[in-house]
Image (cartoon, helix red, strand yellow):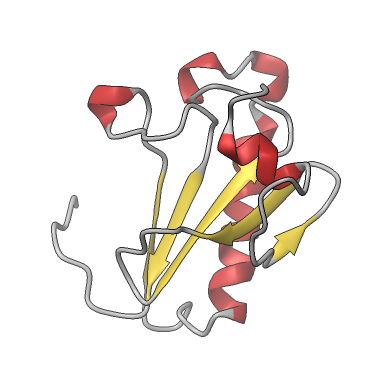
Length: 114
């Protein structure tokens, strides 16, 4: 998508501190971090939201979680704990219309969900 900032990061048109990259996924810091570690893990293929994920694309979410675990270890937050979040749609808090997973940690996070 020509107007998608995440697609522009993937294409190298917008600079970012890439922390992980493979043939399907890329991860980089959130520009408005909510924790000392706040990374975004996104598929390279433009998928607007979790609701737009096709059955054949659903394994991407598992790959995103695998990368989140790997990055949590690399960033030194795995042992104390961290949060992963996928917001879906505007009312769900999704700010960019490109599927992405937030990895947050490095401090006590509030708002326990369970």
